Length: 461
Image (tube, rainbow, N blue to C red; front, side, top):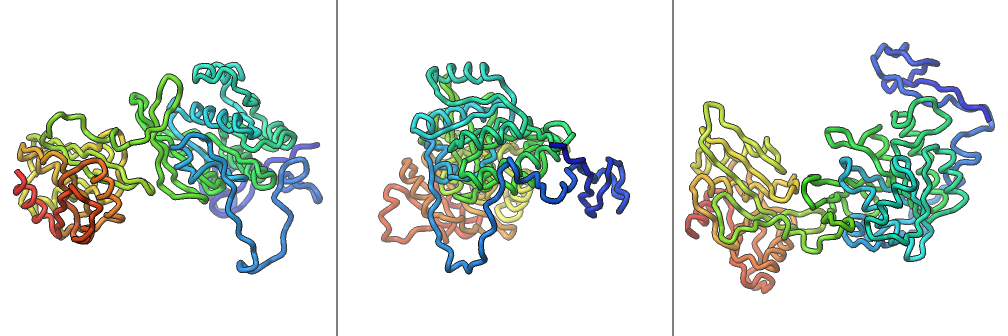
């Protein structure tokens, strides 16, 4: 079968060219032409024929007449991964997982697919970056010497699709999508056109056959998934592997999930036998100090549906004429805003001080509920006085100095009470009712303004 000729399409105006040009001949925009396949002859469709295609067109029906059924899920046997996925792998779903090199993507997926194979599911592991011998060596290192997972070392899309059609696996791992190429295009593997075309074919295969396909994706030096952004729109679930390669702990975060909660996280510890789920992740992010130290304040953050207790550390030190404001795991621009609010409404001046703020354990906190804990940690460091043992705080602080409520404040307080915390400073709107017995042992101080929070802390000294 003859190959389709390549055609270059402008991403700005949609104009086409038979060859690549630096400038679009239609709109004169620079570097906007990307390679694709020309339309095949009548009766030929490169998305059909021997390749998978979408199901035949159905009749148009109102939503009320369409029978809705729950998606069948297949638990992987790894609780933290199932939590992020929303309960397990969905039949016909497409999952994209990305992360830094060496962080553990292939390790986790090999563990998951081996568990599914042992439960009776037909599986397939397609490796484009390693040989079969290398995958077998990793399997033995993970304590899986008798694994029966079928492995296909292949990077040509047409051969992969043929294997998927013939074997009909329940789940297939493609490691990685950037190494796969199609004969229909002349560009190199990993190019925008190849990644988009191969992902489109694999997605159609998943939808038409019911095979769950997991795509491993590379990331850029900025940490974003490499390739066209349309790749994230094609798939059903996008997972990011986070964590410092020098630390034993890893986080998997769901950025997109059509079958579960978004921003759900799973916490893992890297061991000699692979990745193990952490049942109590709050212990990772809390301090190991025998006694309270200045500049430390615990907060409760929400990651998806899970409340996590995280220690916020602050260090305030005398600076030069241009004091520095640095933060790790928190928004640096928000830190500058909080310092201004702290000065204006609480009378705590840090204009000539270097301020460093860190979220312990490598966790990244993007919600504004960390504001109050950050400000109390900074004040504690500046005063040189530690906050009481078993103390925590959360709440958003506005520019006018008001303390705004945080979402699901009751769940946050219940998690703190369960872990034995004694004192909490929270927004007044998040304070529980007086007759609520769920928070016994936890003394709660509701506040409306940052000045009130400072007074409460001084009263606890």
